[in-house]
Length: 241
Image (cartoon, rainbow, N blue to C red; front, side, top):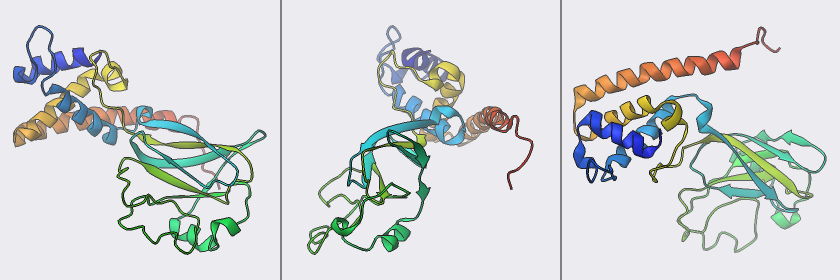
């Protein structure tokens, strides 16, 4: 199914024909909101690969940070590669990174990246941030309202060009065009419609109905998660040690 087909079925099952312009073309007049809201909820409940994704960015010599959007929920791993090899970076806290790299960025030796820390991009006052010197960090100036960005600091600063691979969990992009499709509309459209029904009941203050919808949704998601666990554990018969 695509978004139009999901929206049509959702309106028919809910009886909320006020959420579309008419029953000929089923043009959206509010239904998409509940569908997308339900999709986001499913993404948080399910362990499926549809929420996993990768990003690739270039890191030039001397650089030590990247920023990105794409509705990132969780950063799981950071890998880098050059023309000869690929390897995973070790995660450390931002405080640990600051403790390790105390000198000015211009005084810090470049090297093969070894560690990464999640950046804290938001700042409320940065007038004097670099008045005495620039240290290894990544923060937006206070006038930047880039609330949908995530950032990663990579150390030491790169000694040559690298490609950075970000592995994590990312929200699905909202469905907007009638022909839009994704994992949920194609593989689990019935579940998506039920999730939209649940969100509709929540906004309509239908407490008992909402509880019933949520219970049914969680049962289906539990079965999906069992498949994920089965796939990830298949063939594993011993613990590393």
